Image 1 (cartoon, rainbow, N blue to C red):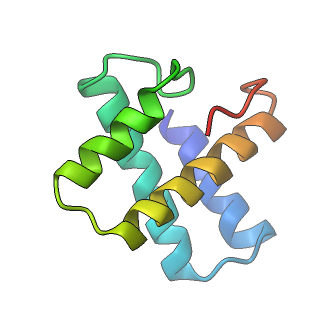
Image 2 (tube, rainbow, N blue to C red; image 1 turned 135 degrees about the vertical axis):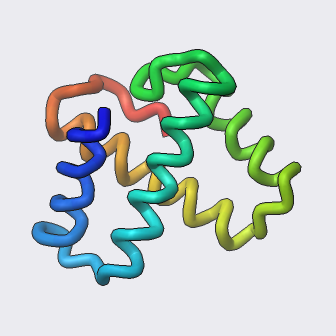
Length: 95
């Protein structure tokens, strides 16, 4: 999984030309989601079931994450799963 996230980092930085700060925030968001999915939800982060992503967002909100940061996490998830789809790793973007 680490390799996939690092490929995503390269995609954001080199292909999409995102600024370093944005790349860092998006990649950190994905690492946080993967950790939560694996450790708390005990699921494959690339195969979330209905409500798993919403559950993570609710967890973040309950832990005091700001609305703007929640929106950033949501954008990062959409972007990551779009990337995973382009790579042929998933067929459907759950975000």
